[in-house]
Image 1 (cartoon, rainbow, N blue to C red):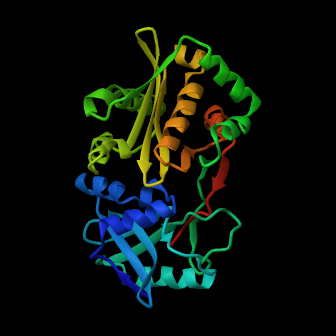
Image 2 (image 1 turned 30 degrees about the horizontal axis):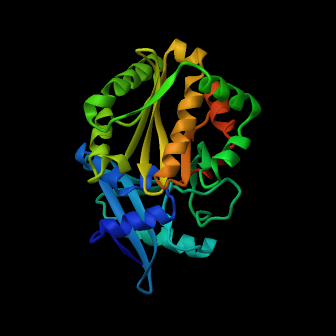
Image 3 (image 1 turned 45 degrees about the horizontal axis):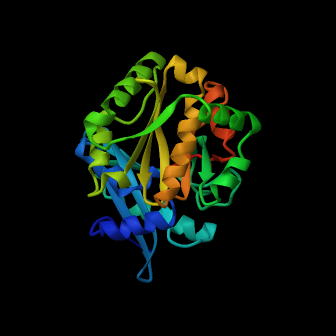
Length: 306
């Protein structure tokens, strides 16, 4: 196997990413936006007999002059199904050719469910995998509604019958800035981490048509904003990235209605997979229950390997 660490074609990368409905962290625009913020990014294509079998995006964490670690999160994106042995050969080729100086480490958190065979058995697991909820948007809206948990659906009906109105927020930074300000306050209050706030403006502008990169929906009650959600779009998949609600929005279950309207809008844009984000049934049981009650599948990843 041969690994190319340069000479990539952006359109070809995006096309393979879209076919796989791959994760946000493997999207070209995700890497290019972080690179502008000063985060080193590496991209690789693994070739076998002149045919690409995988592509992988790495975020690099440097330790001064000593060396660095390259982290591939929810990748590589495979172009075809491979046996665990073939995957192991690809990981070995990536590791051996890693273009970093000094002490080099390669860490991989693959898009592999717990218990599924993979090619990482020769590597050491250093972290258990996170869990997220993946919602397949290919069924009809009626089918998606039928798979909702009864209580979730009841709250949705309540929202639909309320005086709340849902509005699509524009893609100009000034139109969604208030939501990012609310997100920063939430992070401070709850001691949470997340993508740099500057990342969002860069990601929105990373392609010629911002509407292909972002969807933000807001719930209003009269003249008051009471809740909102922001989704980042990557190829034929999207990720729920930011959510905020006021006390009134919480009382009216505004997020149920916003998410439902978001699902409807994403489907019209050709999105077939929605990543609802990480779930933690201990620390954030209510949020986890909200996501799992959509009928989506919990994806628990195998872990991080070096």
